[in-house]
Amino acid sequence: MSVAIRQIGERIRAERERRGVSLRSLARTVGLSPSLISQIETGKCRPSVSTLYAITTALGVSVEDVFEEQPADGKAETGAAAEIARAVAEAGRLPRTDGTAPVVHPGQREVLELDSGVTWERLGHVPGSHVDFLRVTHAPGGTSSPAGRLMRHGGTEYGYLVEGELTVTLGFRSYRLRPGDSISFASSTPHTYRNEGTVPAVGIWFVVEAD
Image (tube, rainbow, N blue to C red; front, side, top):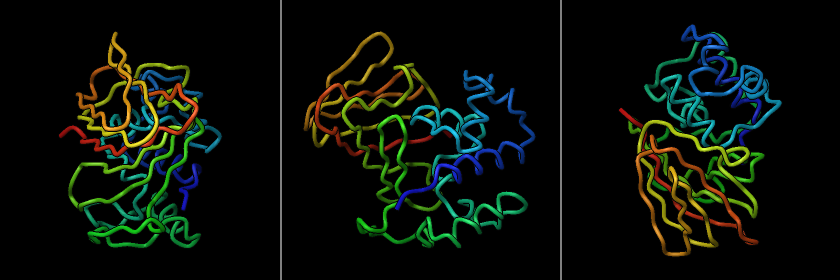
């Protein structure tokens, strides 16, 4: 079940406005143009994996907050954010769960498909934690950031490749991951992922957000 990108953009905009951050200020912080931020917020452009992390980090929220029907602290949303949450629930775009179920079956996963050829599947979440537990698929030619641009954000990443091959660039060095290979690094290191092969690259990723 895919999360509509329009809903993602609306939640980003609602959080930005709630915090009193201007569009231009957010754009400067994450190193993107105000026009691109506007397109993301209005659903005209799907953010790359790294861009989405950069935006949520700049706003002081976790990526999970763009999936959740309610904030992680359980408090009711108000204003625009509440309208967005109700719209998502009524449309049935997100499964209604209390976030505490220890088992997530394949049909219950929340899925985010990005235009850059990357698909995130959320495998689970422990309330109160700041860890994204993901099955990440890079389609052939798929990349985590547009034009191969290196991105960085707070936190730490741990990955294990299950299928295909994936090229990971960390700073000035690139590494080729094959099935069975794993990688871990501080997300503040400029990085990008890309699939230069002809078959999907599938891996299990843990992204731990900065305190």
